Image (cartoon, rainbow, N blue to C red; front, side):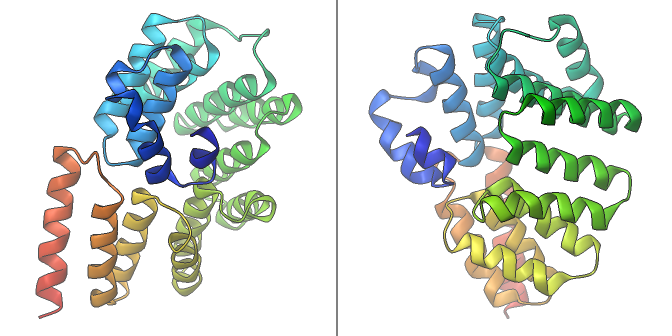
Length: 255
């Protein structure tokens, strides 16, 4: 299941895990974290955040649970709340390299969001030294550079991750977003369409639909919205309302 998740085949991974029952019943910290990660990619952000916070409260010393709980707080309550949680937890020096690097990278993104770019750069350099998942660290580097309005450098960082793994969904989304910021919409369109043909990601397809609409490709956007719905089997109210609105928009724009 984890291998399918890593390959961006979220629907297939979910179908494999359905035999375990609803995600809220999955046992063990790492199982609950994975359930939350899957839920977040299948249309259920609220469920994802709840699962990650629950996993951390049950096992507050686990570095992976800490990372995803802090990320959930970042989404729900902003960067300062997440920063405070990570500060109180301290750096888990005994954690595996990937977990340590991820936590350092998250702290870097939080610092950048709070406009402390010197701290962000120092934390990212430490994350790169620790090792772990350097693909994700490159994506965070791109996000930090974007916050500094250094779009060409940010795109280079995202492309470093893509050079190592062309189907790495976070890097695809980051690179496509940066291409749009650089007024290179057609390159972004090609990148997103190519990735959507291979990956099972509702958020990726949503990004493509938004760009197609912006470019006036309304029939294409209408088909892509249908694909978003197919890739969101755990759809929650907020996403369902967004899908209904986009269905209405594209139907109107298609006559």
